[in-house]
Image 1: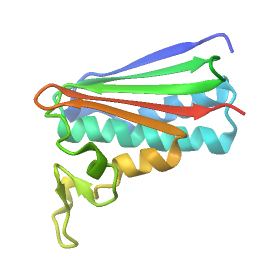
Image 2: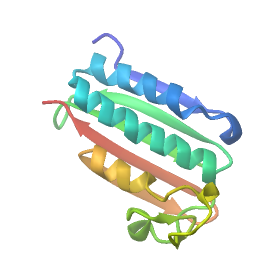
Image 3: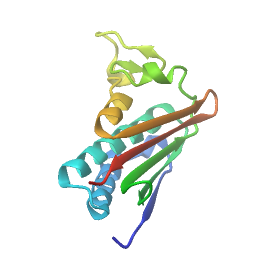
Length: 145
């Protein structure tokens, strides 16, 4: 693989195209050495992260990298300038969005609350750093066998 890094800027939450960004991530994963199935999982995780930036933040960036150490992997780093996450542990659970657990009859304008949970399921390792009123950085890793 010639290209070791790709940086995707999410310019405006209102116009973030999660499907196009996911397609770029899938292609990147294939070039990096992930299988088709693992590249699709990478794409799902990226789509969810971009959706979260579009829904909750003013703007953000997404970066894809292929690293060799400590082992071969694709790394996704998603940074946003949003409100931050009050409870990062709870936010990883399905049904949690905008700082609260969504009721079954909640308006779906708030989403389904599956984003970070899906990222957890699709990636091998996920770290969330957040500061209220400043923003959130999610770093997710997918091992290359």
